[in-house]
Amino acid sequence: MRHGADYVFSEEIIDRKFSQCVRLENELLGSIDYVTRDGYLVLRLRKEEKERFILQIGTNNAETACQAVDKLAQDIGGVDVNMGCPKKFSTQGGMGSALMRDLENAKAIMGALVTRFAGRMSVSCKIRVLRTFEDTLAYVLAMQETGIHWISIHPRTAAEESKVPARWYTVKRLLDTKLIKIPVLGSGDLFSPLCIHKYLSFTGASGCILARGAIHNPYIFKLKASLLNRSAKLVSTDNEDDWKESVCEPDPSTNLQQQEPKEEESKGPKKD
Ligand SMILES: Cc1cc2nc3c(=O)[nH]c(=O)nc-3n(C[C@H](O)[C@H](O)[C@H](O)COP(=O)(O)O)c2cc1C
Image 1 (cartoon, rainbow, N blue to C red):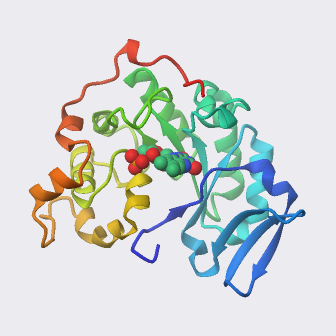
Image 2 (image 1 turned 180 degrees about the vertical axis):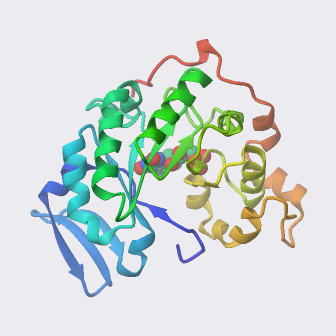
Image 3 (image 1 turned 45 degrees about the vertical axis):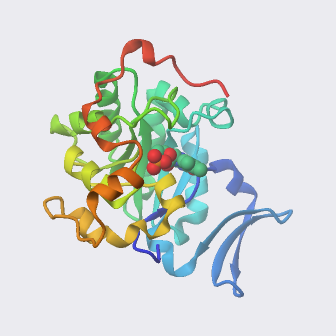
């Protein structure tokens, strides 16, 4: 956040973990720590960042989700439900990408969080794309209907690993329908300011979230102002072509041309 990110997410933390936690103000570090009774650190956040800190939870239950957020409400600016994680630790309990196969439960969870917390913090979820464009659109609209403030889309199916190019085209198609009224944040293969600029311009997304791009280079957020101005030419002393070749992988032009997932590409959640 010091480098210019607007918001920062925690990693996915399973909601039930917070039931065993106590809240400690760590004066030495100026942080707020949530620690289990046997001393295991579950979450540490900086006091001055808490309005822009979004807790991401893994959950399969509206009640335990609300209980976790209740416990942390004074320290966070938002809650996000991870519906994208394809890993077994998440899906085996009906969490992560498994929630995208259980629409009624996903709606119950988001609806309960909205009812309880929407006046105090942002409520959102992060999804992947489903097997067909129509299914993905229907899912996003169902989430919108619950009253969430915004949604993040990682445009790969749950079966796809990060070596498969992110489906920027699907994000664009979703937004082109004009049916989605809440802000959409995109993600996937955003490794440089140039990639981000192209992503925002091409898809029309309201913003983006970075994972690997931010891990590799936290300074990537420094160019935020120019990135968010879609019509602006990138302000940089670097040569754009150099970026394209050296930093932008995979080549964004591949993403722009890619087509919708074919049926045979999606074989359901990956078995880890
Ligand atoms: C090391 C690592 C940890 C991640 N942890 C989470 C997580 O806790 N919650 C989540 O929603 N996504 C998580 N992701 C997925 C990213 O948020 C993102 O959707 C995906 O990596 C695609 O974006 P990227 O191409 O910028 O990495 C993680 C990704 C990486 C590489």
